[in-house]
Length: 228
Image (cartoon, rainbow, N blue to C red; front, side, top):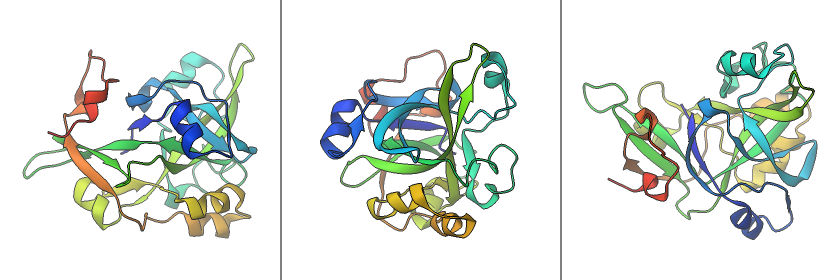
């Protein structure tokens, strides 16, 4: 779940997060698949005053090349319930956490008798930018280039998301404004685990084209989010 998302550009980030220094310069992304390992806007707890680009898919230190990074196990998402046990995450979650800024995300839905045959775009009723909880690793490739890579944490679905993502019943860790600082600076496992909870606020959604199944066509276009 949540392998497909939509993110704001620098101007929209600057307008909503006026106290942040915006170093992210990519245009608005209307749809992107995590499997392409895109650079997306994040704040890391190593510098909570900045919004910078980081690459989706956490790459552990033992992966040594970009080729191997592309082939490495799927670390786009990390189950919150297992985050302190899994090898890829257990050495980073305690110290390396951040926020991913999104306009929304795409989720699969299974209609009666079918398997994930529909897609829904999920967003805030206000249409404002919101944040997902991530854990990250600053990875060095074979050329010596260092850059942050991240995974999105997931939780059990709340009632609203369970109706949409009705096979698997998961959702990303949505961190509202009053929990962002706590997530970035939580002290120890207990404090971190208390924040890994299904979102308790209101969400909005509508059905879209089956963007998660489209191949060979540019899906990064505004109408990809249109309701059908």
